[in-house]
Structure formats: structure tokens, C-alpha cells
Image 1 (cartoon, helix red, strand yellow):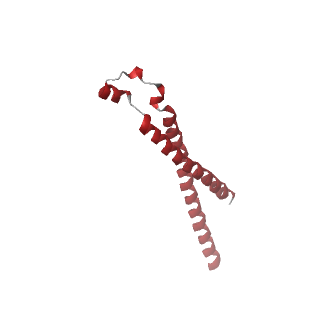
Image 2: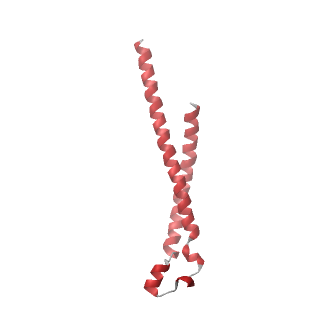
Image 3: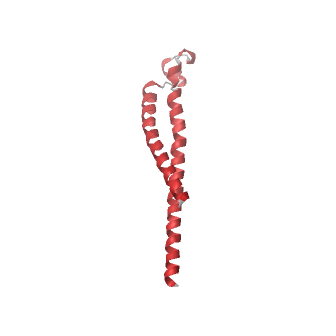
Length: 104
């Protein structure tokens, strides 16, 4: 029971982080859409030299948000699947034990 309660709390906490991560993804990807300019594309399309772009055009903070958020979401989904599996297993074991006791 203690393991199941701990897993439930961990799943809830990771679920909240997952939701916040989705908001962060939206904001980061929105900035990337408006600000990101690949040096290769700029060289080909506009003839701009790669070294002349300001650092903010790389959107490094936004890419970091997306990268870190991926791990929060992955942990949430793993915890959620383990939680569901453990609950299903404990329910099936409980049902089996009750059936055995009723038969005796």
C-alpha cells in the first residue's frame, strides 16, 4: 500500500510538471517560429554570412526548454504506466485472493 501511495504522489507531481512543460513547449516553439533562423537557410536564401547573426537568433534558451521538458514528460509517462500496471496487478491479486478465500 505504501508503494502504491508513493507512486500515486510521484505520478501526480510529474503530471503537473508535464502540464507546465506543455505550456513551456508552446511558448518556446512560438519564439522559435518567430526568431529562429538557421545559418544554412540564411546563407542560401539571403546570402547572409553565418557569423553575422546575433546570438539570440539561435534560440538556445528555447531549445533548452524543449530538451529538458522532454525528460519531464518521459518520466511522467513511465511513472503513469508503472502506476497503472501496479494497480491492475494489485487488483487482480486481490480479486484472486478473495475468490480463493470464498471457495474455502
